[in-house]
Length: 166
Image (cartoon, rainbow, N blue to C red):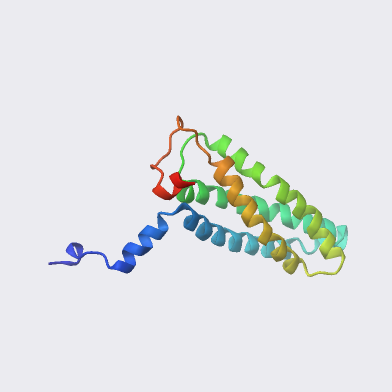
């Protein structure tokens, strides 16, 4: 008997079952993307920091926010579409829907971030606090709008039992 004949351990089977749940995949990919987006925010912030002396901290914060958002959004779109919601179809329509889910939180972020920075809060801490709220908004928006498929539209993989349940 070689290794390929061995049955997977109960732990491996449990992990596969867990991974089959789109909500678990969403949390995993969302956690990765939040960390990635936050890292982009910090790096872009360092890159545009000379802009603060020319435009002031509020405008520099908005530039940081928009550039880091665009970088993180492309990565998030690919990961959510491929690994979480596992859909196929028109990529452009999906991306437009995907970005539209972020318009309200991004707009709120664009108002809150500079305000918090001007009021003396550290830019990185302010952005960290704002990101917490975006998680719930993005899950429901992507689940029921960005990657929603009607019964006549094609999915690249059949939905799992947990996806049918709600």
